[in-house]
Length: 327
Image (cartoon, rainbow, N blue to C red; front, side, top):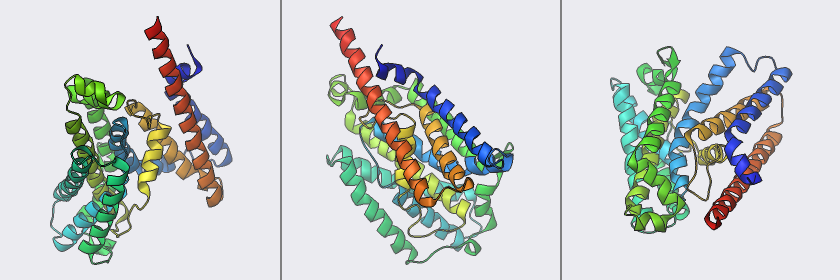
């Protein structure tokens, strides 16, 4: 077995060990890191990132990318915030469904551009990112929606709990369970990986590639819309530049979790660990008084190492497959 294939087999275990060792190291530097209060805050802050990582994983698995999710998040959050500020009696569930609907529409548009119009994902999503960001400023008139304009029931979405678990974390858990079942046990879930592994073979075998691409971008849009409402509720503020650049953090969480940019591979368990690692870095580095400039450098270095490992894994797996064919 090659080195790359060996890494592929134990990659997630290695990532888990790294997270444990990193946590122990930070705890030794700052005893407040592993306190219940800090851990709860850290997981809560990571929940939105983790939700978006699920959709981004599906997109990347199909050899795509979505740079518009930060703008979609901002647009959905702004429309939900404007709605609840104008109609304070709006049920929080209705606000969440409204945000998801806005996100789904955004995802459908991008899915059409990629699957039917044949535009490269990076170009289509980059263009729509600016469209959605501009639409956010237009619907808001360039103004913010601040905490005092939002009803308490809306702000309580992020602070309430279900079965003793923070609502954001609870929603993230439900999404991970649902999508684990979807990609593992449904025909469509397996087709997503088939399209990413070899689009030509998938097409020959009868899979509708366009339909699959349209689906994954629609899912990504819906999750972005959900994240938009949760974000605005959590921070009690809706702005035109909300989550600007956040798509890069989501992509980083996927890469750290072992999702191959080349498409065809990625696991739910991997992106959970990737999101947790990114959450730990965001939380721990300030706690141990690391300079903000060094924080960016450290995060970038870890992401680069993850990309290199992914490349080694892919090379090792490809080599193993080639040897098996020859045998």
